[in-house]
Length: 409
Image (cartoon, rainbow, N blue to C red; front, top):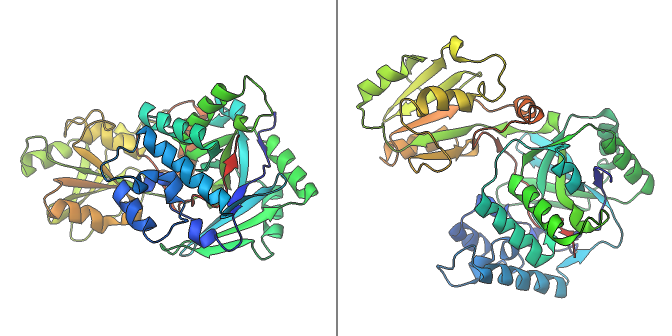
């Protein structure tokens, strides 16, 4: 069974890509999705967030939501807004955000290789979110949200990608956040074979983002295939980027209170494990082991004591772990960031001003800015068979939903 293979993608009709393309289902809440889809009847949000077409207050996991998504999906097929390619293809997908660009391969990846850890994971999943994706995939009979995979870059693939993308793209749109999305259809049989063989020779792929989607695909495959290895449901929709093009931003933390301490006592405790420097301007960490901390009206630079950084533990030496293990848990009393409502997370795309805003308005008591986790760190954790703490990575730019889907029925 190959690691990846081409597939007959379900895509917007030639003049509909701009109408269809939508943000990933999990970066918008219901109200944001409702506003984004207003006046856009063909937005993929009607499929990925179909509660927007049901009465306000409808629970996102209600069975009616999945039925509505299927109804909207079928309507787009019947109206010719979405069309399926006649033969298996690969697709190249280029994202451009400001001065950053990255080009990945749209393919379907092997569920069996996911199950055996050849496609490596670095996060736990939540059962409720897994169940949601299982119902969505099974009801639609399609995988509509791609899993973001990465691999150690390969010169042969780089050369082929450069050759193909020298031509004009088949799809070229710029969405309302300013990110440009371009797509090339790869239909040449020799190129398809080269891609398949080159990837199949790789030791592994890594999940960058999309653990719930890949876990759900595995569960749907087990439900549907009775081990028919050629079944479409034994593969999951992926966009696969080389590691040297992937952009990871900081993923920052905000806390509602100082755990019944005044500011002076809090700072004194922080100073037992960190060097604390008061700063006149915002602090964006410049290296691992360095953190920005914001209290009302005041920034500090924190540097963790060197003897607290373990040399041989790829998880414990992550900045998110150093902050959790030496400050957030012992000083602020938050031991389970997955469930504790006192902590929230802010993607780096929102900037440090968002941290200041949430503290200065009184919503939060303290904010922490982190240095971004590197892709090498992610791979080290995955190679060790370990998992990262929650909210360790924030990837930008985001893949669009709706540009290519994988039909499994």
